[in-house]
Image (cartoon, rainbow over all chains, first blue to last red; front, side):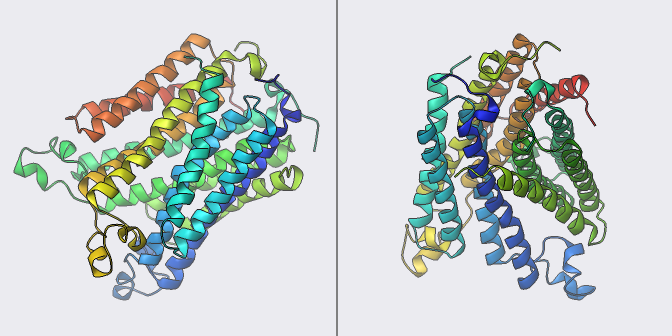
Length: 155
Length: 155
Length: 155
């Protein structure tokens, strides 16, 4: 493991900042896509939201699930299940003085596979498009965790 | 971008620590509210939990969904979808040497809108109370992400 | 509060890195267990996934929920609701120069209770095995948050 740079000189940390911010913004985009489909397809979970599309008894029929909305919500939950562990492990990895070019390829591949995963989920593309993009992202995070534990096990 | 302070002198980082901890505790509170409503309204997801309210066949009728429990769970999930990206992006932003007073206002507004969001969700208050508080919190996180990428793009 | 060590000399931070990585890997394992049960029990959420188990009309019957799959998903969501706040608060706590042995016990107890929680959820063990392990983990995270706010309140 190389010597530890100051945070302000730590290129891996700044690369991580850029890639993590991009993939977190992509995750936040899922919230707005869910809202868009809820409003355009009139499918709400809360009575107070359904009132935007109709009054009284008429509003109740909009308290329903819609397959397109549920699909976006599943994609969003999958993002949470994968992007948040990437952030947590990637942050610790960035601070453990890894090799810059190795780190960059971890970040780049992860961000690319998660963007492809969202496209594959929302289109939807036939399997194994979504399955493979999920798996590659998973392996990237696992690889960073493995390098962390190999270099810096402190129990 | 200003010079980088040492972490122990980094006022933005300590302000972030305080506000992030407060809003994370608020999020954790949702777990206890869910448990409270599950127990008092006898609505469980797991057979082994329903046994606390009745034995044998009698327990099965408590394996049900309850609208109040589901509402708390939706509020909790919305917290996860919004507070975790705030934490991730806010942490990176705090370490990028931003202006202290700009950073403080980002943190204060976010924490206030998320507390208001929970009140609006659980009461429930009529829309657009909940929708607006969600949107303002979303914009705060987006604003920090924008400042990060504008100042420190490293691809 | 003690003096602040450089990150590379910060033993608490490296202990946190090890324990957090282990518990995050445990959380990621839930994704693979969900996939395993979806494939072996043929219970899918997406039509494009069900096609792996049958063609045309035959595939539709695999678009169903399965109690074992739902149980793993609830355990996974509970992990997200508890392990992510532990990571966020624990990271800030690790950087606030706490006492090493106090910090180590927080990390060790949390990781042990979450591993036990997963075993109790998936077996399933009778209550209060799962409830108690959840509660102890919750108290550990709360204790770190309390120490942070007591030492470093910056509003």
